[in-house]
Image 1 (cartoon, protein in one colour):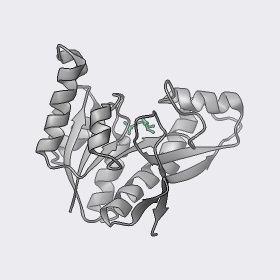
Image 2 (cartoon, helix red, strand yellow):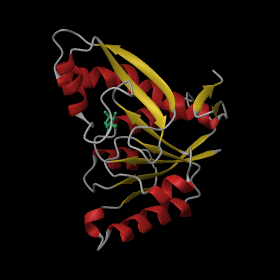
Image 3 (cartoon, protein in one colour):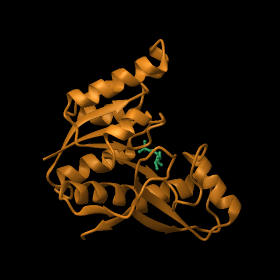
Length: 208
Ligand code: GRF
């Protein structure tokens, strides 16, 4: 049984998609063991509590130093015997020591087709603003393993979404979530939970 910790900072719609997929057995062999946020008022925490999932909040601002925050965060995850950490709109940079310890056991959902529109500063609506500014005809979402470089780890799954001429950043963001993010993130977790994901020469191989 894969014990999963989901890290959130905002609305938690990706967390909700994971919760629903587990309930509908679209994700198997998985236990949603822990939800962590850096933001006490994140709606994602309410979603977790409603689903009966243990939650915790680690706000860097409540710690005297970044090291103390990172220590508390890492200790809490280790105590829960977590196998996979899922970053679902988590706005905190994961400590390098943590990435090291959980090499290829941390995944992230990014709202573009990496390597487009990603890296430092590319998050939330800004990703879609840049996609519209560039005039791309297709965008989408990416699930990837997390490594020490922002939005750079091995790509697990991607799903494309057509850009409409009358799209605003808001309409595009919602369609990318609905058609791509809420689809590929649960699917990626299910594949990992059922040992169908391997990495060969830095590239992900999936057994569909
Ligand atoms: C999503 O668009 C995700 O791609 C990005 O942050 C947003 C989180 O939204 N990383 P939610 O909290 O899952 O609703």
